Amino acid sequence: MSHPEAGFMHEVASTPRGRGVLACIQCGRCTSSCPVSKVVQEHNPRKLMEMIILGLRSEVLGEQLPWYCLSCFTCLDRCPQGGDVGEVMFAIRNLTAREGNFPEGILTQARSLFENGRVVMASRMALVQRKKYGLGEEPSVDVEAVQKILKKTRFDKLISKGK
Amino acid sequence: MKYAFFAGCLIPAREPQYENSVRKIAPKFGMELVKMEGTNCCAPFSIQSLDYTSWLALAARNLCLAEKMGLNIVTLCNDCYESLLMANTILKENKETREKVNKALADVDLEFKGKTDVKIFSDVLYEEVGLEKVKNAVKRPFNGLRVAVQPGCHLSKPKRLHFEQRMGIMALDELVEATGAISVPYERKEACCGGPLRGINDEVALNVAKQKLDSMKAASVDAIVTVCPFCYLELDMGQIEIRRHTKTEYDLPVLSFAELLRVAMGMDLEEWELKAHRIPITKLLNIAEAK
Figure 1 (spheres, each protein chain N blue to C red):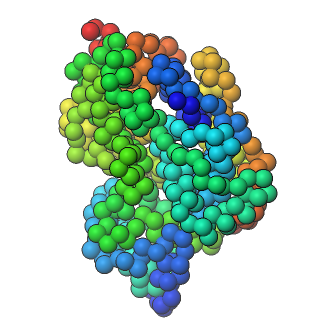
Figure 2 (spheres, chains in turn blue, orange; figure 1 turned 90 degrees about the vertical axis):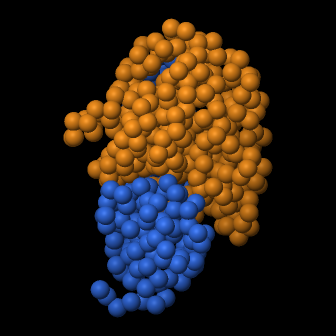
Figure 3 (cartoon, one colour; figure 1 turned 60 degrees about the vertical axis):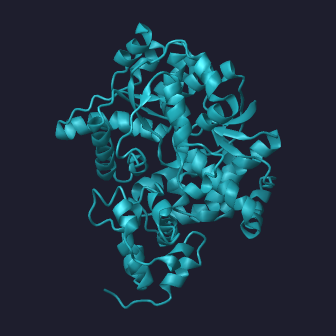
């Protein structure tokens, strides 16, 4: 393991969804509540919180584990400390993404969002069905507006780092 | 009852039978669903995972469009509900974040003012139409049908977003029972279906779905009824994949609540709508016919 970076917990806590890490008492209720932990042994939210607290920055940001989280928010509701584990997962994924480290499936969705203004595109079959049921086209999307916003927030730059 | 109708991506793009059912039900209860023009993706979990401000700005743009229409939003999808409701709450409460997001919105001539509310279809039916009216509209009850209600995570989680007035799971249970069906309790009712990991880690997604399906099967149900389009897809398609990998057979037809209610109200599904279900639903529909 690399040398612990003492400031990492505070780096996480200072991001919009990361504050909950400061409340963690390592009880493990998040892990026992987690539907993914039941099927993937390595996915252990308690341990991830511990690694943040210990300042293991490169290990945490290099991990694929935060991307196993379903954001079902069960841990958030069950944390006795209001530690918002599921929210901290978002904070970690945001930091990880800045390093250009995110799964291909996420990148595909992000690209679709930038190019089409939506994540899921209608299949040809669905378009035929829509017509048949009189539902009209898919709801219209203002792609230009989406791109303006995402350029302003530098989302385009962020996803161009994706590997 | 007039609402800005936010259909989302997945339902219009993959599940037109779900949207069609909602559009058939709504007018019977005096609900007018006004089309929102030029919206964008709600910015679900995958996008929120990449960047906080981008998420809020995209969600806020949709909220602003509804504000301009002077209407509250009604959504069908649990993920749109979570994204829009959470963004709306954060932006109403936090001035600093609101100002930051409004800067990003200035380029598209919009400003978040906090004048709209976000609701999900089942809650609107329960709270604003009312259970009695729904019960009275049922012409072909699904008497005795044992249903595993799959609420989907974001119908009620995280709890702090869903204040007392948001009914969530309880409303859905009662609405399902208004059709004559029985909402059977089962162990993993509030657990995730695995859907959010589709396309990111399919194997894990399927294993999570399996836990859920095992728990439903153990409760001896005849069918699964959900409001969430991700659960709808994951649990229907997931059964086919699980059968291929493990030979486990669940044979649990999956219906959206809108389809269940539509049939119970005496409106048939079209042939194509029946065919959209990977696990055949015809035998369920016969239960409603027989009464």
